[in-house]
Length: 244
Length: 169
Image 1 (tube, rainbow over the protein chains, first blue to last red):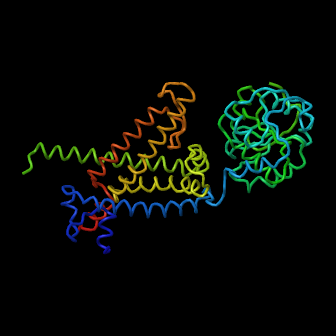
Image 2: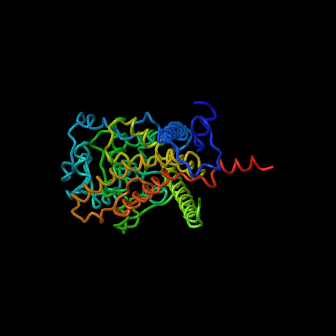
Image 3: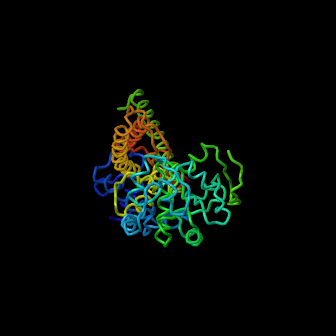
């Protein structure tokens, strides 16, 4: 394609019989379909190249080589020791916690079962919240949402582990996870699977499956029960926080 | 020979086409940037459709699509490669609309609710929307894109403005 024709295609000048028309005659004529296809192809090629470049330059851009959804986690889960799906009583509770059986959000259960994770509901989560071990970081809450959501409100004393930015939090979470007896991971609740992704990240770095619990109702359930919330950075982890 | 009425029709058509181009361009820039600035949220939404298993491909779609939409929107706003951009928008809108429609059908079946009561975030850049509204919106965008593909008006385009500036004495 000659330079004249290239710019004619890109900038909309119609080309007929190798001649570039002047703008004055343009609205009355329509280019051949092949020309439109060529223009679309040019848009597709330049647009795709610029799109990937913009993603690479953006500080929030995605890493193309990173598996954000841990598709291999199911296989790992099967290698973990006896995973429970829902803790049924205190004798089954790995950390000696008094956990009763209340069905979690139905949407999440099959996914949790598939990934070999345990679930807790709001009653159990609130009981964990008042567990004295929380003061010594032997029982920790982990917030799997984005930084922005965390700042807007989280369970008091909860640590962060955004599974889409593990490089920021994983080191601290891994140390915590190895020292703690119980780790309750939550996200927004409902269809949100970020808590499971964070739990699987912890499991992948060696935190035993038995310590990991998913609070299926998430922050939505927590807030709707008027349980305490903390905004901004993590400040407290006292079990003596006011009851709702 | 041009009669006054045909000239007026032509003028009206030009104005409609110009408005269509600017509206479509602005909307795609807005929706594209909305997604591009929160790529993880968009990635999660794309993931929910369960269309691709390969994570490289999934990441590539979520990373490039928002910026590509923004690019097409900017081209339309600038009046550059209008027909080609319009064709690209049609090629994106048709499968998107079909996929959203299919997902709405599956949600309707799962929840046992009327079709128009189905509401979810389709990843289109507007958050949660009722499906009937979304489908109507997409069909309108499609109609505007087809109009531009056929009409391709370039008044107030970058080339025109540059051209007239360059030709002025």
